[in-house]
Image (cartoon, rainbow, N blue to C red):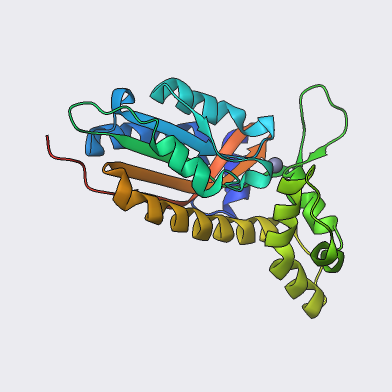
Length: 240
Ligand SMILES: [Zn+2]
């Protein structure tokens, strides 16, 4: 079957990849059955890229959990930062002394017939970039990025350029051409580090459970796949 063949191809680079819809539904049911997350006492927050191609699974999660706080932006980096995470932590409903936060974040990359970084979008003849923000950062002049004056009208993209600086410098020093697949994995690690710092800081003050799911979304003509990176549940539930 076409879908199995495609999954096998993607597994060459992401061995733990799953259909995105299936992954998020399984995780949601797992959180309900094992950790007693229910829509009544859980707030869902996502930090995905602004690109609407990632929308279907976030919408599915919003419908499952009944809420959706957005702390992401370009390239799937958690641009909302400490303030965004702090804010959502005050929006969580508490039922019988229990409350839970569910964070989902991570970058994304297109895959089209053997080519990483490209997607075919509805009613468009040409393939387009995914992630466009990350692709643009790879094409930027990383030496110049350090000297650039902050542009208040392009802050998110400048943050992605700054984050990618060590990767681009390493490529330049070793004479290698930057690759979107490698860059996506590099960005995933940076997102994990940053989101863990913020969530670990928030967790002791939250007095509830926090589930953190990070990973890379792979956009294809047969829908989205997801390669999980961090799946962590932290914080003790309050005793009833
Ligand atoms: Zn993107």
